[in-house]
Image 1 (spheres, rainbow, N blue to C red):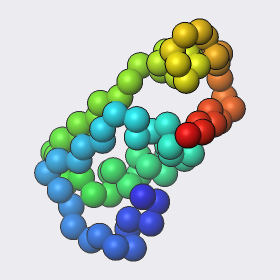
Image 2: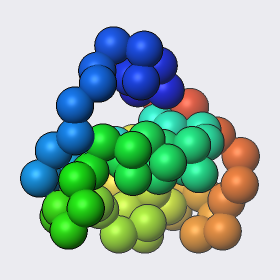
Image 3: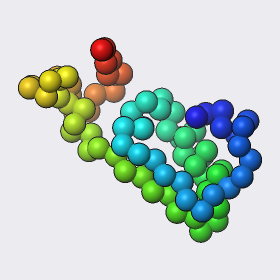
Image 4: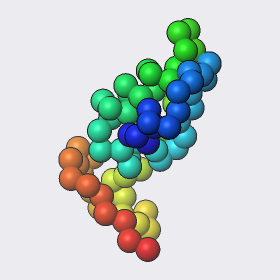
Length: 78
């Protein structure tokens, strides 16, 4: 994602980001600059995301596993 400028040179009328994307991006300022770079003037940015409360629960959604204001990475294992 952060190297997109090395591979894509156009701008678009629409940039879309789907559920769960931003939790994997460690630098949201850099991500926003990339969106700005590829969005045409007067283009639309569509962003959908879960409410952060979903990241408070443990893997089974049985109990609270993380603080709402957690700043540490959430490690997922499968």
